[in-house]
Length: 106
Image (cartoon, rainbow, N blue to C red; front, side, top):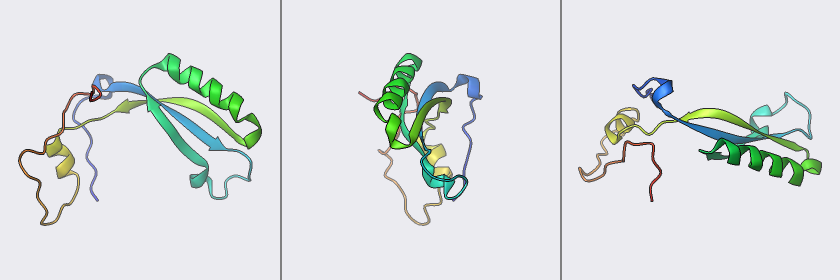
């Protein structure tokens, strides 16, 4: 599978916050890839802080910790998304288009 970056500079993409869980109850670095999980991605930094605090308090005795990480939201137009994936002979109908704005769908 090929990957393609969005043309817009990072500063023009929407900022979002990934809430991340790290399992801390076992030895690192053994199987570390299965110990990190993106729980959810949110747009509001205040909500992200509150959710991290809530999850850390709720799961303090369960061998995991939560933190937030700033990242960027990319929503490329459908043509760019399709060019990044090898579809082989499969084609999409012309009426299948993705919105290109970073606004959530209602």
